[in-house]
Length: 230
Image (cartoon, rainbow, N blue to C red; front, side, top):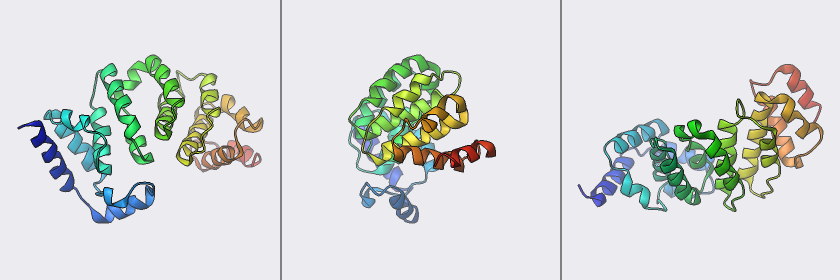
């Protein structure tokens, strides 16, 4: 088969997963993209398809064609990147893809396992992503800090890296709040001063406290303290 044949096959297999009811539900959760670009394919089926196509060697040409037309094509692209086991190739692919990410769901679905094994190099790239003028690139950088750097590789400086971000972007600031709430669960002593000393903007501070109070990973004693900071 030619590369064009592969691209057509991928589109056909994606459309076979179409679910109009789920598409309508997804459109409400992702209001900033046109609803007609959402097929409604469910994530487990999409992830399974990505593994099959990658194993069959049919992902290459598809990943070179950006931007994609459908939300699920972006999801498929993210899941293809997760199959890459070479760190530098994966990083290059992520760098190429990020400017075309246009919604929180695609951004948050991208989580290459190979990054876990190369955290020192990843942290340097995270610094670059956090300084981007693209909101979903910044959101992805914060997500990588939250995923890989809140335990054994945690440094207080990382909290500052996120706290100084100034973006009038809802989906960036929601991720900031999510990051700080998770940091409270995993690095309570280091993170709490951001709230007690009011180092965060008021919106992010309120959302952080809200998310932390809703978290099962925060103790009742800690939640009581946080409620008092509202």
